[in-house]
Image 1 (tube, rainbow, N blue to C red):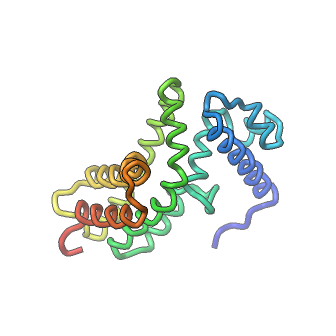
Image 2: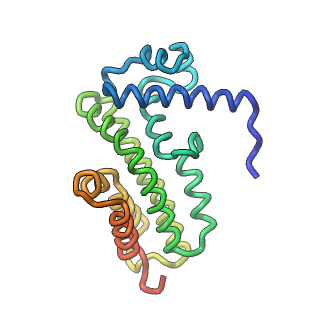
Length: 209
């Protein structure tokens, strides 16, 4: 059973949520560079210093916008936390893969616009370019854990290393892959999910899995 949050923790989370939601609206409307911390504060109905105290710099705010979009209703719980808890309790390797695909199916449509904001801002802002690289590296590290779970269950295809398995998960579930196939390519989410599940199973699992 999770620990009970204090009133202060609940209030802090709500303040962060209000800031993140306000920032997301402004970033989507005008872009990252056109949106100042002052505008976010006004939109959220908080003081500028509250943003720095609750979230951090504008770069940090953009990162949290991505976190909240990825986590959806479970925000502010970090995605790696709830995905790891879910996967570690699942003995079936195909279900572990299905959990990933189910998560992506919900998260990728929510995060597509945020990834676009980051991509556009990164082209002119070294700080955001660094953020883009850091978040990409973070996702790859998280997928190593999923690959390790498959290996621990004796289900990883022969000759497949943890690094190679993580890279396959990273590529198949990448936002750009989703954008190319669904948003630009005309696939619907059902077709994409079926493809992602089958491709991951073929790439990762042994014949006995």
